[in-house]
Image 1 (cartoon, rainbow, N blue to C red):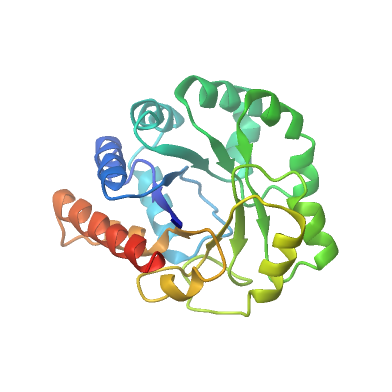
Image 2 (cartoon, rainbow, N blue to C red; image 1 turned 60 degrees about the vertical axis):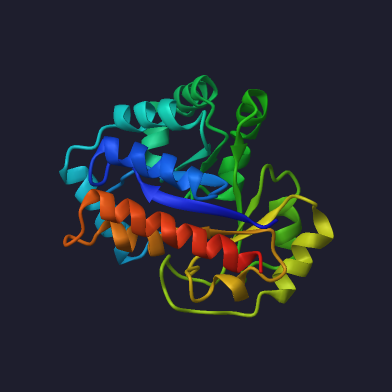
Length: 246
């Protein structure tokens, strides 16, 4: 069965909501949850996730909120931390790795950490049994892909197109999928632009999909109550999980 990874922004609209939503997504069949760490300059993300980041920061998000949420939900759903490198560097990778092991967080997704710099931390991650997720993109050469996926853990994050999350773009992915498969058996998940309209097509040839903007777009709807937001997001998660496994 193909996997569904869901991204949500931690602390938006508030911490307990994040916990409630995460547990509901687990019940809806989401396999892994990316807890997004709010950041003021999320360079890989489009306007939807950027807006949620800024709202969370204005609402007073603190790193302690991420830790408290993770401690509660990680026993119930496979949890990853998705964030930009600055907060990890500022507090220290060792601090976050120790907390990840303590709470059961299985991996980090750091989109602005170049592969070569990430490699300097690889031994720390491997020692702790925590995955540092690798990215591949349509712009990568076959030689580059071989290097990127050689030591990949947990899954490989395939960017569906060059650009930011949430955009309505498409590129031919068969060559990159073939190149990845040539060098590793690590599961390959596709992200960027995955929603209920595109999920079935994008899931072809890969092992799972990563959905973020489609969920966060509902989070941002001011005319919905928190309960309504959770209901709509979990219903969408169920729909996408069914679509990718038809």
